[in-house]
Amino acid sequence: MALHVFGTKNALPARLSAGNRFSRLAPLMLITGGAMRRFGTETDEAPPLSGTLGRLGSLEVRLARGPREVWRAQRLRYRVFYQEMSAKPDVVARVFRRDADRFDAACDHLLVIDHAARGRFGGVKPKVVGTYRLMRQSAAERLGGFYTQGEFDLAPLLARHPGQRFLELGRSCVLKPYRTKRTVELLWSGIWAYLQHHRIDAMFGCASFDGTDPDALALPLSFLHHHAHSQGEWSARAHAEHYVGMDRLPLEMVDAKLALKQMPPLIKGYLRLGARFGTGAVIDRQFGTTDVLVVLPVSAIDKRYADYYGGETPRRAA
Image (tube, rainbow, N blue to C red; front, side, top):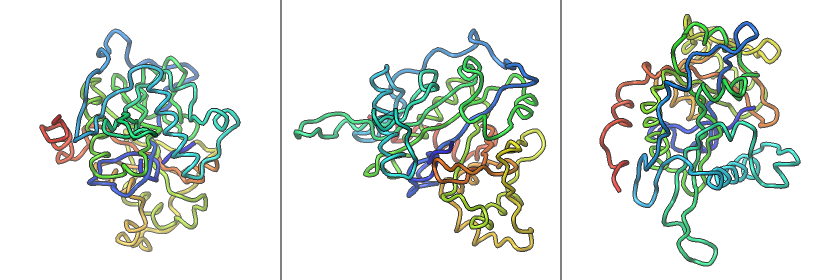
């Protein structure tokens, strides 16, 4: 299953993806040889990250504090994914108007809160206007794997990096009136603080193209295959039963300028950050998308963005 921050499937720095609606960075599988491979333990984890992680005007980014705030994030996800986008809810989701699954309880939920939002009767009522679900590998180990392990075979990749810490980014969305540069910058300020606090080494996930016809996406898929293919120690591929070839056009037929023009803002943003993409795409019919695997070691993030999100900026001003 693939999800869209502004209108594709994962939040990006606003300078990279303003105009996109929502997004998903999908996760990894830690199963090797039929058993769970443990790369870390609870004893070497950092304590919970608390407090404000960034602020711009009335907008604050921080982690959810308790079940009620997680519930508010789930309601926002339902509103964006199922009411605004084309995702198809099951009976439970439709009845409770929440996008929820068994992984939510094991994840941290990053929130953007507008403290100046108005309630139905005109009074000030803080509102959750953006969210991102963060799943560390220790949580995935307890559950038997990461959320999207069914799409991509990542066990060989993880086995090549023992001792490194991986993070799944997913279930990201922003309420339509807040799809601006500063909202996404707040999300990524929060993600960057989270990466540093928990000493994350690499992120994985899915980015998505709208539509389920790979031939209609031949040019951008072929561009990623020929020019941004993950190789060597960071290579990974779609499971055989879901595999859709991305090399739909030969290299000499790929017009790079036109391909980038057709690329979702999310994917162009990941390219700028330094990400590479796995072998093979996956069709997600529930969400009406074609998913590609993003592989992004923290060390590969362009220094400009690392400095920007890690430095002292107005995003941390009250």
